[in-house]
Image (cartoon, rainbow, N blue to C red; front, side, top):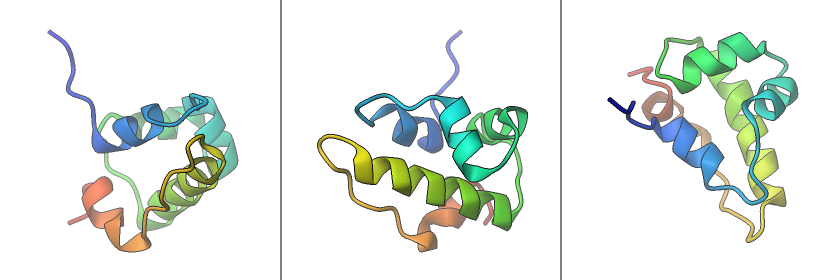
Length: 82
């Protein structure tokens, strides 16, 4: 059975060039284990979610074609913080 892609993983996978989990974790100053947990739907803190979003937006700005920035108001939905 294939696991359903989370919104966070979809956002990472749509970027060209492809960005690794390691790249996002390093840029967000979190461990790879933490990033993988969050990308697979695990719980996180607001500050970690904000750091990941900042990293994603930085890479999205470098993506070709350039992807629109994700607003901070999307954090609760992207990271199951409702």
